Image (tube, rainbow, N blue to C red; front, side, top):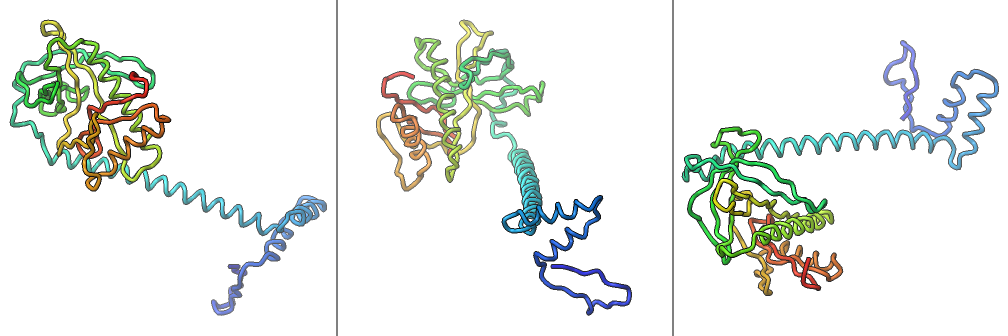
Length: 295
């Protein structure tokens, strides 16, 4: 719309409002102050040389400015939503309290241990020292491993064991299990985690993730026994498929089976991630079957 300049004697009813026309743009362009006689002709020639006149150029500039502003506003909205989501998560975690408070893990012996973490992208190990408190007896077990409740101090909690994170330490019940088996298991799970990230990049309806897994070497104990170390996640633990072909009823969940099928197709039928189990779509202890029998 074009709003023409009015004098002090004009009322609001005298304002001439009409749609903006291309001729208005040309006139305004030609009426700009110029430094020399050639400048007006140059601007007019440039205007005439454009396929659709100067109007398209004017509207393109306005459109790009508006688009940039909308993108900036959208980016701010995303950052605000992310900040609010984290704030809500922290508030919820504080209200839930410690689900292991009743087990009094803070009363157990404090032990120093070495933590071995594997970087699947760089294919190397990172070792650091941690401080933990672990139960003496397992609270659960599977076919091959038994599980212990454990707390580990973070860099932020210092000596405050009430704020220490809850973990599950797992060890093989067969005492003859080779130590290298623990490292092989971590490498496998971290490779499966990369497949989860690749699956998420295709923007599925529901994203997946694999537990971050490490090795805990209890250096203050005789023989420096090894444990697998994972965060404790509260919720219903479900096994969705297995190594031998078991598949949970597809009417219940589609995402775990879709993830396994994705790894098979994306790898060119060279491998498949199976034995999908965990809480929701946070999985642990997967297995990888390959066409050649090794990773």
